[in-house]
Image (cartoon, rainbow, N blue to C red; front, side, top):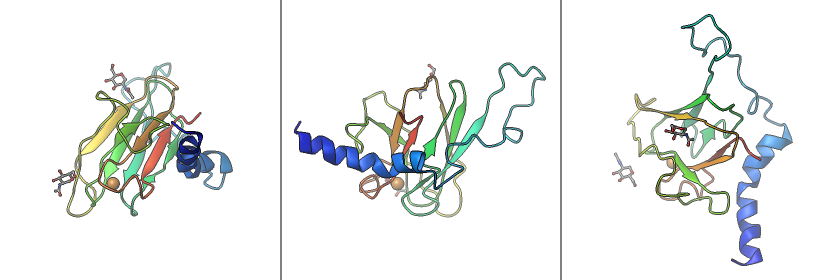
Length: 151
Ligand SMILES: *[C@@H]1O[C@H](CO)[C@@H](O)[C@H](O)[C@H]1NC(C)=O
Ligand SMILES: *[C@@H]1O[C@H](CO)[C@@H](O)[C@H](O)[C@H]1NC(C)=O
Ligand SMILES: [Cu+2]
C-alpha cells in the first residue's frame, strides 16, 4: 500500500477520534451512571456489569454515541432505527470492509418505523479497539462508523 493510501485512511477515522479527544461531546466517553443499567440480581459488587446503548440510524447515518469506552466484561447494546442498518467490524486500516470472516456482524435490521425490537448486544472482552461500521451500501462512506476503546 502506498503512503498516500494510509494518509487517506487515517483521515477517515479522524472525526471519530476527534470526538474522543476533542472534548466537545462531553458525555461520549463517560460511562453513564450505572444504577439504571446494572444488574440488580446480586448485592455483591465485585462483578457488577454495565450496559451502554448505541442508537443506530436514529439521526441519519450515525451511531450515537460513536465513541465508547467499555471495560472488559461489559456490554454494548445497539438499537436500530429505520434505514436498514447493521453493525459490522472493520480494521483500522480498512474502515468500510469486514475485518475478517469471524468479525462482529449484527445482520441487517430494517424496522419500518420507530425502534426495532431486534437489539444487537456485544460483549467486550478486552481493551483492544473495536472499529465498527454500517455495512449497508454507501453508509460507511457517508460516515457511519464508530469505535469502542479507541487507542
Ligand atoms: C436490507 O439490506 C440488505 C443488504 O443490502 C438487503 O439484503 C435486504 O434485503 C434489505 N432489507 C430490506 C427490508 O430492505
Ligand atoms: C467475547 O467473547 C465471547 C465468548 O467467547 C464472544 O462470543 C464474543 O464475540 C467476544 N466479543 C468480541 C467483541 O469479540
Ligand atoms: Cu447504515
